[in-house]
Length: 444
Image (cartoon, rainbow, N blue to C red):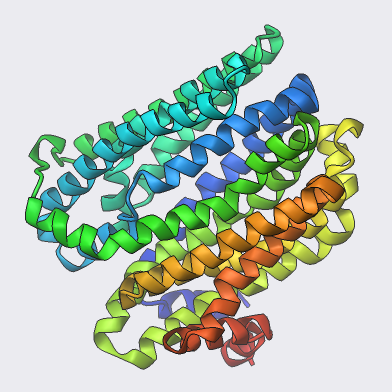
């Protein structure tokens, strides 16, 4: 058995070893985040109580909406350009940084303006949103991470993130022990982002690269934005149907319902690190495969989606039946109502996981206008369903709306549009347990 294992390891190509190594670093980061995050999140939720925890998550949801729009949809485009033209990294990274920084400042002002319009009498909500939304100005300093990702060297980003996670976990525990007010946890959220950004920049410099060498190229900026502009609006639509449920719960229900829903969403979304690590690690090889062969390109995409589908089924099936005991164990009896919400919401992971792979495919195929249309349909569907379901079913209604709208945006729309049916077939094969064929072909 050991000899067979050694033989398999020896037969792994250098590129695959690099991918697996990169993936393992990303997994290690997220596993550490998950372990520490579960512990600290549960402790924080118990300490704050459902109402205050809901209010904190209302402010965080506000931030997340703008944090997804502020990068201007440049993520996969920057990665694509770095893979294709690594010798122009200073120009690519510099252009992306300055575009994102300008956008971050504008969106910070926009987010603070909107919360004062929505909640003019609720000073605490306004203060929380202002503090947390300051992270929009910090976010562009994560740009060095794009270079490490393009070179399959995510271990450096992991080092920065893990140090921040550990430091801020200790800070949050201290805050709980000191019986700190709610506003202190908002400052902790912002501080974690600052520590990560500092870590990224320091490691980038330590590796011999120079942030001072980054330069803005207006011609490249125009070409980037020409491709990414539909992704900007697409991302806005995606964020709306990712986070609008929490905003609408805060407006249509109460903070306690939002706190219960937030616990379910956090537990459901915790597992997204697996999909992120896999897709971020294989995306450079998928982009390269497109240049070699269309068959190889789709073969890699299919295997990626098969793996993602297998992981979702392994998570969602047991979670459907064990959600309530898990929630009570981690968060206490006060949050027991989050169990049924989690058992429904967890199935949105199937479309979320596929969505990560679809982002790479969309950017490579330059079908950004379709992404915009699909996301808009998903956003409108989610908003309408939330209006219908939240008043009567509250958190459970929001979770039902989420699963349906995700499925329409990420799967049904691909079936409808002729140019995307090929990717719809990939998802269909994966949903239809196509991963079993992979296992049989590899070990049969």
